[in-house]
Image (tube, rainbow, N blue to C red; front, side, top):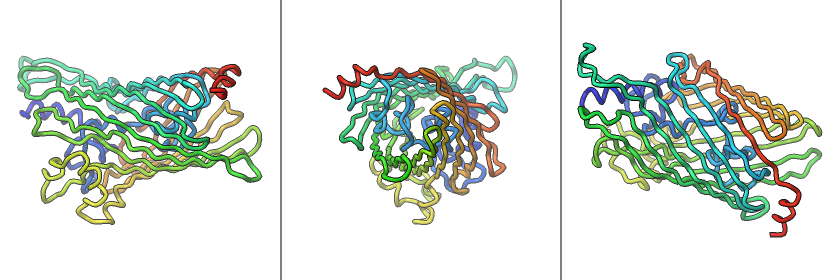
Length: 389
């Protein structure tokens, strides 16, 4: 890759540098010793405001129109006939005004046991000027880098309490355009997600539910911006978590949740930087549990933790609080999140706000993220027909 392309892609990567280190473009970043790096890190950005307000926890939360992103398995438990959401997230809003992440999703409940969904995640990185030198006459053009991922999801109940699901995904990333003076190109690839979900009411004095979820996302091809000899892993991720919901009274309920995440991507070896990139997809995934140069203690540091609490009043108003923690040597992301939600009849909205807690900048700090949603419930006739089927 020549110098001008490297500079352009470095500017793009800089949008992830502060607070997104463990899934950023390669390079030593401030506050990390041996962080894992991948291509297309936008895949790991939380798309919706509800879960953004919960510290990015969501693998075992109650299903909604964004369920496919968090755990394809839980979509089958959704209690609506069909619906959708539109989410908007400003990126680096304190610095620029033309970078943002959009997420459009929709689902359809085929019958009591099956559901499908489709979604599109779009990342607009603003405008970059390409040039061969400092003079205005040396400008060769401008380009707007863009990335997107298109998904299709299927989810099915296997029992009254257990479900599975899967997602297929197409990924496209164009960071430099089609300038003839460069040797870079757009990258594309494919991936799948696999998820399971278990939920069961608990016996007790109050109506309570315990849910457990597991999801492996972005199991897919490596991608390259230059040639077949230079390919990078995408952010394959294992997410495990649980959620406990209890009704305080007929009008008030609260849910507590926790998620654990680990990238199933090789840890860079400081003594042999190219070794990790040369591994196969499966070798990288399975080897990611034992390849940290620092041994078990470093492997534990690669686990990211999200905790959250969600309060609902009469299924109309929601208040959310969350916290995300990442080891200092693996990216050092530490932040608190807050959020609010509202539901009325077929419509609703969510908002979220992020506050770094370690005096380190974050691309989402001091910005408001929001999600608009709608859903249509099943009619009594449809419910009766579903039970009969």
